[in-house]
Length: 346
Ligand SMILES: [Zn+2]
Image (tube, rainbow, N blue to C red; front, side, top):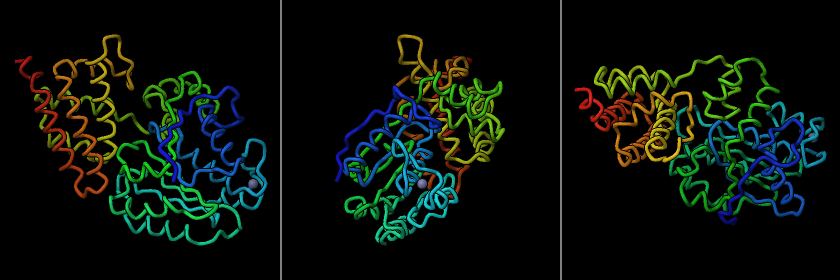
C-alpha cells in the first residue's frame, strides 16, 4: 500500500517534445519509479479540471503497454501494442468513463476488478483507468478497496479526478497522489497556440479559467460560454427579478452536474473577492465586475457554507434523476443568501 505522499507536478526544466510541459515532472517521477521497479500500483491524478489529467493517464497507459518504449519511457507509437492502444482495443487496458453527470455504479467497478484478476494477454502490464473517479458511488468505491490494496503483479490503476476531496479517504489513502497544478499562463498559451492557433486562443483560455485542455475543447467544439448566463441568473435571483424555479429550468438543460461545477467556481471567486486584502487572483478574471457586485452583499461565512452546499449538490447530481429539482433547491438557497442585495435595493 502506498502512502498519501504528494508530488507537486509543475512545469519542468526540459520540456518533452509534443507533450504539455506541465506534465513533465509527473512523467519523470513515474518513469523513475518504473525504471527502479517501484512503480505504484495505484495512482490518483488530481488537480483542476481541463488541464489534461485524463490525457496524461492515457499517455502513461500507452507507454506502459508499449513493447519497445523510446527515450524517457515514452510509447514508440509503432509497435503492435501502440497500434492497439491507438485504436482503443488493447486487451490489457480497461477504461471506466462515467456517463456525463452520472455516478459510476458498483457493477462497473466489479467489471474492472474482474479484468485486473486476469493475467495479461501480452505478458506485460495491465492498466485500468477510472476517469472522474469521484463519481463512484460509495458501494462502488468500497468494491474497489481490495483491488487497490492487492492489485496483483504488473498491474496499475490510474484514478483521475478534479474533485479528489470527494473521494472516500479509504480510496485516497490507498493511492499515490500526484497533484497537477494549473499551468502558468505563458506555457498554457504556447501549448494552445501550437494545438489550435487563431485569435480566440487568449479568450478561450480566460473562459476556461486558465485550463488549456478545456480551452482547446471549447475552441474545437465551438460551444458557447455558459458563464455569463449563469452569472445573469444569479444576479436575477438575488435581485428578485426571477424565481429560483425559472432559473433552475433554464440551467437544467446543461445538466445539474456541469451547472453546479460552474456555480462552485464562481462562488469560489466571490469568496476570493471578499477575503483577499490585495486584488484577488480569480478563476474568472473577465467576470470580476459582476461577481464583485454579487459578492458585496454576501457575508463570507455564508458563502463558505454555500460552497459546501454546492459540493454536496455535485455528489447528489451524480445520482440525481431530477436535475431541475436539485438546481431549484440550490437557487432557493442562493436567494436566501443574497437577501441583503434586495434589502440594499429597497
Ligand atoms: Zn510501442
